[in-house]
Image 1: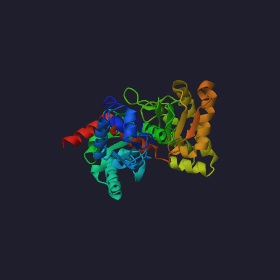
Image 2: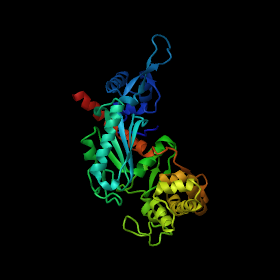
Image 3: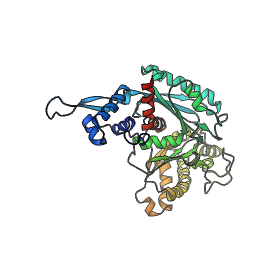
Image 4: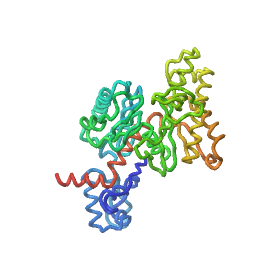
Length: 399
């Protein structure tokens, strides 16, 4: 998995920058590091010793000898810490423990009610994280950081939700403060779909620079990868696709208070409401998926119609953003053949050929793990940034 850590902090010569070179997973000798960096042997030696003392670099076999003792190779140690990644939805949460490459080493699925408020939900998250640490024989002190995705707008700089439509009691709540009091390391918070985009990009499409991830579930949202990096916008609300006016939205009332939003006509609950009004016995979004999979033609056509409505909005996004890949996830993506058929029908028919000639519109391939992997990736990019590594080494040296 690519951690895509941005350079910075030490002008390209610090220990953090040296570690950045090693994040590609290729073991190297000290001589190779000297050649790559152009630094003096003594400088590289000091940087390497500091990183090995912090357990961030470890020996990794020997290089071929050119005479005398074979030189030792060094490699980045993904087990130097663990990250808690959390994906919170309206009715579920997935809590995962990953290594510093974002590989999931343990997970717990929780049934929650986002409307029960932040304290109840976050306390459940903390309990699950501690269980994972115990089962993985790790301590709270091993936690490098916590990443959490929430199903609503988040001010990324503070980690506080901002007027989230389906999250009563969460507005401006200090999520980082709540979690950092129980778990170690920085706590970073973002919108859940942003992190799904980050997770899908890191694990499946690391070499795609322009990607749009669309989640279709209780709500509808999008995460935007632009230039290979997550695009959050000025206040962190980029990708709020569900509250764009749908062409056929009419006067359908949305949870945000407006009418005619895409979410009000094409989300799982919106489809269920329409089908129940027609007399179909479907309780929720998963029931809708199950009915479609069982061959219910009415449910299947309703999902395809929702795909068409989503496609009408996405056609505008394609013209504005020109992505290479549109990934569709969320509970309704379990019916990908029907949902995507509707999306593709409109996007390919409505957008210009130049924008759609190589455009892929595909179902998520991360099997529900995009959110937690994205949450972990967000933390890893932060804690392994050169400046952060320099601060960590400086703090250790001062003790």
